[in-house]
Image (tube, rainbow, N blue to C red; front, side, top):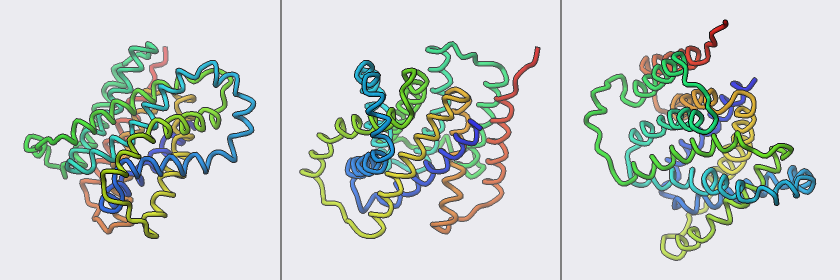
Length: 291
């Protein structure tokens, strides 16, 4: 069940990547991040306020932990992706995003002593090779010809932030409901994001609000935020951050499918091969030796 929840989360996040590319001329990155989380708070509040009232003592006792988690997972993670998307190539974004599961596995090993078994390491490498096949079109030599821009540094920061968030979720205080946890981190993350959003509004061009922009913001606010984060956090609670991390390799695959459906981009043999490698890597990594 945990794997299905993680897969569902990656499907919604894949849509987020596609929309981020499509919106870069309509809405600046910090504004997109701000309105995303504003929508998420409004959408989640009616379902979470009653449980939050019950969990308020736990929230107050662990406010520092929740603030750090909100800063990393809400304020920084997707904001860095949106900023990076304005200053670097899409292939670079995909390549660097594929490093997140590696960081998750390493951090889980450091903080939780989760073992890096031979099968887990082999599966991670196989899945990573599938991602590389996908983003290079089957010509791995393209990696040597990549040029790196300032946005690549932002994207690397996003990959590390997502890994740190995934590891922090494992330490969610006992008794704190998932809806309470999400609402508090969303609100704190939005508050921390507000100053830089105000700065952007004063120094950049205004947002082009039209039907497509509004629907896109609603999608990233509801499905890529509330629904996806709920599913991901539940998955981590069931199977742990290291195993959930390997499912994250599917994001480029689902992004390609979404681009095919909504943007008319083609799907070829390379995409099928990539999917096979990623799924095979996930299967290898999760083989448990029975003593």
